[in-house]
Amino acid sequence: MTKQERGIRTRLALIRSAAQVFEQRGYAQTHLADISSQAGVSNGALHFHFANKAAVADAVEAAAADSLHRAARTAGERPVNALQTLTDISHAFAVLLRQDVVVRAGLQLACDAGRRPRLNFHHTWAECVRRLLGRAGDEGSLADDVSVHDVTAAVVGATTGFLSMHRASDEWLTHRSLTGFWRLLLPRVASPQVLATLSPEGTAPGADTSTPVPERSMSESRPGSQLAH
Amino acid sequence: MTKQERGIRTRLALIRSAAQVFEQRGYAQTHLADISSQAGVSNGALHFHFANKAAVADAVEAAAADSLHRAARTAGERPVNALQTLTDISHAFAVLLRQDVVVRAGLQLACDAGRRPRLNFHHTWAECVRRLLGRAGDEGSLADDVSVHDVTAAVVGATTGFLSMHRASDEWLTHRSLTGFWRLLLPRVASPQVLATLSPEGTAPGADTSTPVPERSMSESRPGSQLAH
Image (cartoon, rainbow over all chains, first blue to last red):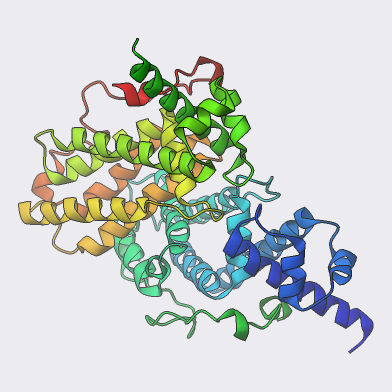
């Protein structure tokens, strides 16, 4: 491993450790020493990569955004209609949130009253949903009596709510509960001829089952693995 | 005014001031001196009422819960079917959240990673929604092919999401946007004969309009007024 590779690996380990500590304690209660100790590196190594706590939080936020964007892009590449793409993206996000502490912490940091977030996830997600529903309208996949605005609000609202409640209880972001949401919503928003072609459970090949994916414990976690691929 | 009345008034003023500071800075970044100075009382007076910051936060949370319970009870007393009651309660909550900083701060404190909340608003709200939907099922108001579990998740998820997004932008909790949500959901979950009787915009007499109620500025705020009636 070259020196540069070691540097990248350390940076990813610090981002993951920071996410773990931020998630547990919140931004204001986190000290840089907790992050370096959790990552098993010296304070000096941490300061080589990040000027201060705000810079670490920004990096966690950016890594979370990157993972979400990549998941959305992958789901968006499948040749299905726009309503199915939207369903698939929501399932892909739920998998990430269940499995990836960096994504969870990044979204939590973006709502933390104690810091100034760099990214506006709600806005970006709302834009993505609005664009896909606009495409569904162009394709003739939307029912006549629903408005893109109302469906956007319902989808963004519910998914944001599931995420925020997921912090208290795992049941809100299981594959089963998200499938239940789409089973409820799709018959209302899809045109009759399109509805029969839609899968509320998502179409990602082998991506998910109704069994919740076990959360990796901190001792088993592999620093930076979700960013390395 | 008796000494006891003055004491009650000071306590309510402290709760409102605490809510304003907690909402702006988050729990961890709030100091007791900010709260007493915002309320225009001495540190000694604050300590007479509250032992420490955690006790102030608990009082804000309890006051928020009290306001929400009273709004739900009032909406629940109207002689309408259970789906309409649920719609009406959601509108009553939205009015409180737009107008009352104590309710907003109480809900925010309940999700703050930096403290141990005393109340679980999501759980209480989910129980309320589940009970009303169970009653709607007993009344024969629910469509045959929807499950109480899925509708509960969608309603609790969406309303929780609207609340969390309301912190970034007012548009998510307007009367108009919440009405749009129910206009989308009710035709899917209500039985056909009940649907025609339902008002997605709520049935509270003169309680709301499509024009957002202006937020009172801090200088205009009347300490404790929302708890005094």
